[in-house]
Image (cartoon, rainbow, N blue to C red; front, side, top):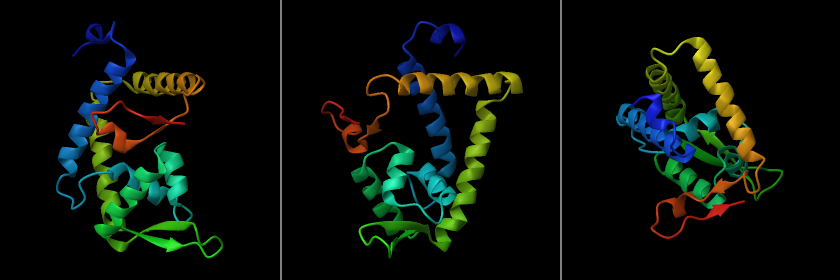
Length: 167
């Protein structure tokens, strides 16, 4: 793939192609873990310890609350996460990594570092910095558009019905 192949394509196609390649490479390396999805969310949960709730996780990942609920249930079922009741607001629950969860987050982080390294192989530090600078500007531009700051309903993304974007 070269830059000429991307030149006249919609940005959505370019980003989808890169995302598919990246996620595929990471997923293949992470396939030895007991959990089979939502890897990145565990790193977000770890970074926000001890004060992360399902609500905050939904905001950070920009996904709907129902999807976060399913994700947290999945993690709890696999013993990598547990919910702890917030004694100040019993409707709110903190998310805590279990010992099992604490053991796999370094594995996930290292695999993402490996995939990042492979993705940027042969790319100078200056070009890499420029890539992230441009990506941040693109994100900021899109965020400022009407409905640019959206949350994605992951359940809808898997269906054949029209996709619903939550704002």
